[in-house]
Image (cartoon, rainbow, N blue to C red; front, side, top):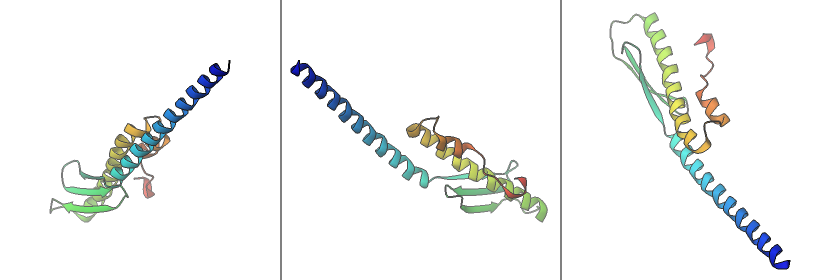
Length: 123
């Protein structure tokens, strides 16, 4: 009877040890993914290619290019605003794709990243 209990305790210890090792491996993979995601950028062009915007994962706009010189201020403003929003969402989508690999598609962080950012004025 004692041998049976000893075997059960040993088996339980091995299961717990395996769970700890699995958790450590998941933690390492998650840290690596987070570090990758922090460095992501996305470049988006307006639908007809008049402007190009690059956004970082932080939300910062790192590059804006106006590729068409005959745009009036109102059109340019609207194109830039829309393209900035698209670039920011594109980098969030890249992050969601990468994080899905380690956190799973059902993770709340994935849903948060895929949800478009709220914009003042409805954009």
